[in-house]
Image 1 (cartoon, helix red, strand yellow):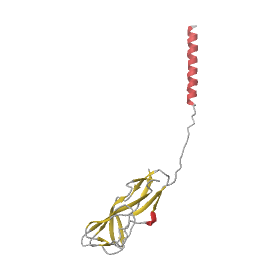
Image 2: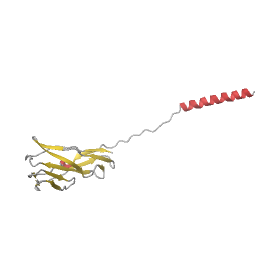
Image 3: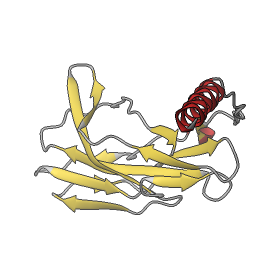
Image 4: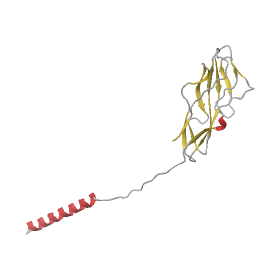
Length: 172
């Protein structure tokens, strides 16, 4: 009789374990799905204000002209004897960022030499700077300026030099 009771208990335990395992294997759980759509980030060259080193009278030695990244940029002949004529405006490039309020963004400016040309002649711009550094926040500092350093060789050919450079903003 003891063997019969032990056998019945063992059989019941086996059936209970198998039923419990089946219930775990068939468990369903609903999980919430989410998405948040935000306003795309935008970048514009405000007032079409270019990086403009102005009118420069070349000197007898190679020169570098530094134009600060600000609303009213200081302009300095960093080296050489070129002269910046004050009768022509010098401007840092001006940009405005738009998008989702309070979202932060990264600013990328050129890290390599950019060239402006006049026919077969060229001048180099290096050491780009940004008034906001490398980051901003929409709704806080939506406006920024980009400046740089222009190399003016003593042998620069008199002409109007133009070119482009790229600035990128991206949400963090």
